[in-house]
Image (cartoon, rainbow, N blue to C red; front, side):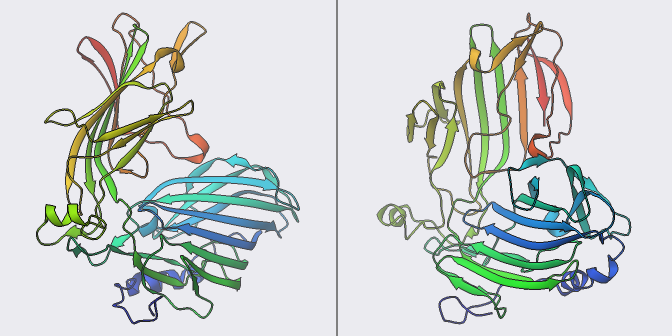
Length: 421
């Protein structure tokens, strides 16, 4: 590998030989798992590495060249990548040209003959794709823990470097006639990247391809070592309490345990150096988090175990209320902090009445932007005189797999509560 700045750089640790060898021979091992009916005539992938959450958009053009209709499209991922998959969504349209797409259901499948080293998803088509027809498919995937700090420890004055590993070829059980890969970087330093003959780094975008006539399960390792000082905000645990009051209010209370998931701080921390030159002596740290609340949020507070924290800012308009949260101290790699955010919402915006029943329609996750939540607990409380029955509906929204571990009913502060974790 060669540095993007014209100098040699210490390469990051390579992909394990056993894993690479496994992927290289997948075409032969999985011949029975691949469908002979579909051919990917074009595959364009765009990988966004501008934050610590990796987003990949694969735009596919598939043709049915077999005699039988096709009702699904298989989407394989290596287990080492699938374990970090946070969300997957698929949109499809049929026709000679790309038209308006519809959301496709996604489910986990296990094709016949598939080895345990791969995880397969299936995008279900609204109607079978007939012989000679063309399908346009967009697959959006979101991955966590896919950027590894290298080195794992840095000083206060050092920038954070991370490693990303992928394949320049689109991993597919179908033959691919033509494909490209574009990796968007956050800018700044690029220490090194895998130099294939058709690799090109232009500004903050790394391009591979085009590649032609690739067999099923083709794999070409790519490693990128680059600077990324964006906030690696990881919520070890978030507890959201939603209390429905008969006084016309929905009270939201959110308890956060936040850590910096990037390279750990090595050596001492100097507050004087940080305050005098924060963008030099604290470039890898983060000090602000942004929460986008509903537009009519009111009675907003932000505090920790010491008391109210005044270092925060609030903006609001007709579309949203934006809260800028600033902890008491900057967070470097390995550091943690805890705090609580609370606010009220108008009852009529989130609770609806129909057919003798009341429905709560409210956002399930955290309003914080660009944050990875490792454990989320949601508690819903209603007035004890309103009902003795609670129902929780977990929807599979736009192909995002929704899971929960347990549902427990209990009485807390004379309020029936629903716990989902």
